[in-house]
Length: 320
Image (cartoon, rainbow, N blue to C red):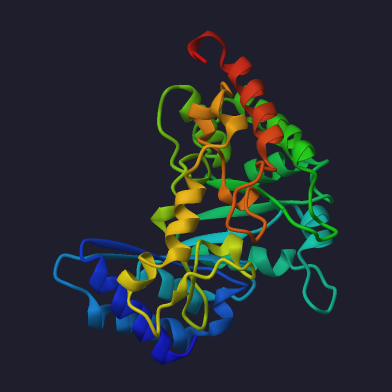
């Protein structure tokens, strides 16, 4: 992202949200932008910060570039860090590789060690693929051994060779749930599983996938293009460009209104489903195929399998 684009993004969004705003630096690999770029991010945010305004920075990284200097920068500037690692070396290095073909596990763990030595609490993101979906026990044991306490297990969705069958993913998640539930490890958060449990017990899920709340965030591409979120990168769902347009102009555009109105529409097949009040129609990522019209949610069958399994485990305290 060029410096002029960075300054425009910071200025316009920080002006629009004077109370609280959160920036999530994602990729690709965001640390490839370099330390100079992120020092400039912090400087520009200080330039445009309003009195009393809370500005949060989150960053998702594969961890391979993290050294002590990066870790100290994150700590000094309050960055919240997520590290992508897909399990133990035997699993991670089949699917998370450098261009050379070498596995990234050792470099990722070096980055994690740098964060730990600096006293930084971090979350973990594991991508569940066709390679790893058959190994829930190994991945769960890895989480326990590494003492990770906040982890998300996301399915690899799309058309790549590593894309996972979503029903197989549901059974993977159910097995992880069984292990976690049997161990009674309430000190560990498993993202989607926690949100399902919270919903089944009458609470409100935190994750956007179950809140029908696409409107709460947007993705800004390197050139200032505005999209629903990073799940829609490359699809024909561009709302405008923050460099050439104001926020009000973008949110009043027909593309923006049409997408968010459609994303909140409950499909006929969902309306009578007993799980609707828990999933709220599911994530829009699985319902849009590039057209401005929702189709059947590709995660629906998988989510029903997970809801059914977890609700049975929770027993009489769940009321459907």
